[in-house]
Image (cartoon, rainbow, N blue to C red; front, side, top):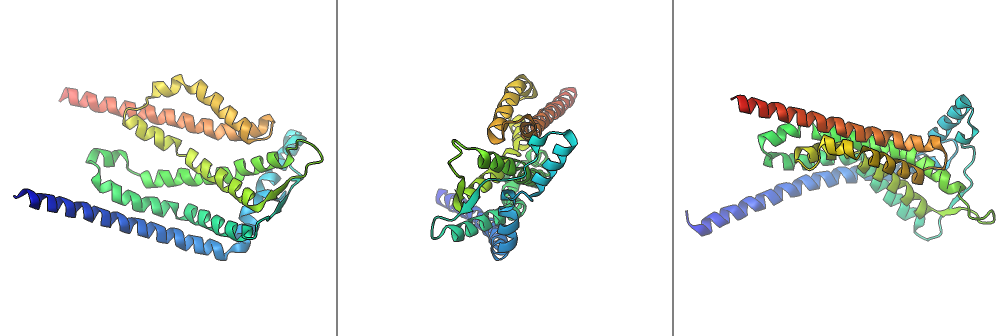
Length: 278
C-alpha cells in the first residue's frame, strides 16, 4: 500500500476518534446544562435551603451537634449562633453567584453520567486485562465523588463556617461576609472533598501501575495520619471532637487504600504463580 494512502487512513482514523470524543463531550455538557437550568429555576431550594443552609443554626449538622453535645455533656459542641451576616457588595454579586452555584450543582448532579460518557470513549482503547482491572470504575468513582460531596457539605463546610464566623481579631470587628466569598468558600470545600475522596481509586490505579505498594503506604501511615490531623485542625474549630469528625473519614480512606493495594499485590502473586506452573 502506498505510504500516502497509509497516512491518509491513519489521519481519517484519528479524525474519527476526535469526532467520537466530541460527541461524548457534547452529551456530557448537555447533561450538565440541563441540571444547571433546573438548579437555576429552583432558586428558593438551591439558594434558600442548600447554599445558605450552613449559614443558619437550623442546619441539620448544627442540630445533630447540639444533640451530641447534650449526650456527651459537652457544651462546646453545640452551635447556637453564627455571628455573621451575608451581604452583596457588588452590583452583579447575587446574580453571578446564582449562576455559579447553579452550574456547580449541575456539574455535581451530572457527574456520574459525564464520567460514564468519558469512560465509554476511553474503554475501547484499553487491553482486555486493563478493562478487567477497571471494571466498575464508573460506579466506584461516582460513589466516592458523591460521598465526598455529602461529607464536604454536611461536615467540613458547616464546621469551617462556624470557625470562620466566630474567629475575631478584636471584638470591635464585625464579620460581614460578601456573598461571593461565602459561595466560593462553600463550593471550594465541597468540591475539594469530592476530589479528596477519590484517594482509593488513585491508590488502586497507582498500585496497578507499580507506582506505590502496600508496604510503602504502611511505612508512611504515621506521616499520613499526622498530615490528616493537621488538615483537620486547619479546617475545623480548635476542639478535639471537630478534628475527629474530619480526620476519621480521611484516615479510613487511607486504610482502604492499603487494603486495596494488598489485594492487588495478592492477586498479582497468584497470577505469577499460575504462569510459573504452566
